[in-house]
Image (cartoon, rainbow, N blue to C red):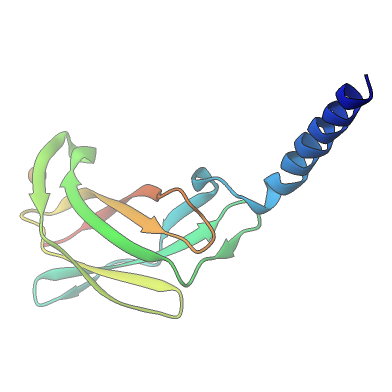
Length: 132
Ligand SMILES: [Cu+2]
């Protein structure tokens, strides 16, 4: 009887702890990639600038490691059309990518990132109008 009560107490404590710990462990879905300004054309390539925002408090995440960046023309119904994407050094919380599109139009930039303190991979897609 006493032992059961101890176990019940421990369980209540554990679940209370898990609940209290929840806000500090933000889900990967609590982040959003956002386009910053209009892409700049440089030697027929588009420089796309992206910001990663923690949506629950609106704060930018400047130290994410974006390890995957792919572009396709899915928004124009051409999902199989890809374009080379080169990640440029991040600066002041702005992540830049050089995209060499085969044609002008709306492109989808798919990104995957590791965020400090977040175990899950953060993924997102930004649609961006590119020129050629
Ligand atoms: Cu196309």
